Length: 212
Image (cartoon, rainbow, N blue to C red; front, side, top):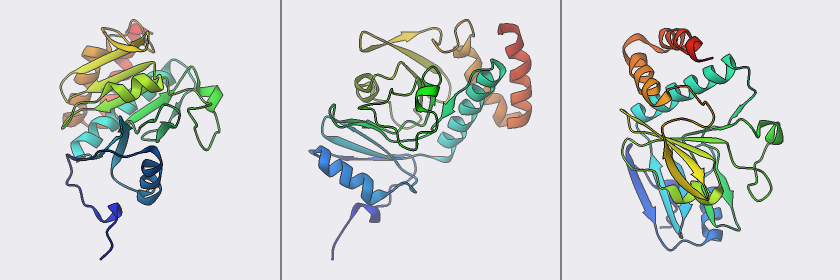
């Protein structure tokens, strides 16, 4: 009986590691699994990680994404949100699928493009990772040159800024300076779980006025 990876069932909240995988095999794996899947992949140091997110993971991702979109809209800034798009660079043999990502400064450079090629196009300006069951590996994002990476573990927000090709933890976002997001993001994500998304966004907009 022939076996292929599309037959695998990974329980929510779990990961599968495939080691000693070359780039060509990773490309074949992406093609085999296709785009319509509930898993996320990353590739670094010849290791593929396949992760199946939990429902609470998706909730937090959605709420943080909504908060970012609200800030950008209120600031009148054009952006492009590409969710868990596969970002890869063959020359660097790196690939990652963030929970959410945004083109902000480089939005115009990628506007309308059906396919992003990091050998030619810039990486997203901001990537979001929800770390509820595993801890984000920096390697992929650092090597792909993503300027800012947020990590949320369900209780706290970690903001990382790329400096000299290495992430440095920061108290403020480069994308949203002077807005105390390390305190605000966890607070409003938690508020959404008791009051609902719509009421939370209205409350967030009122709070945001003091900083814009």
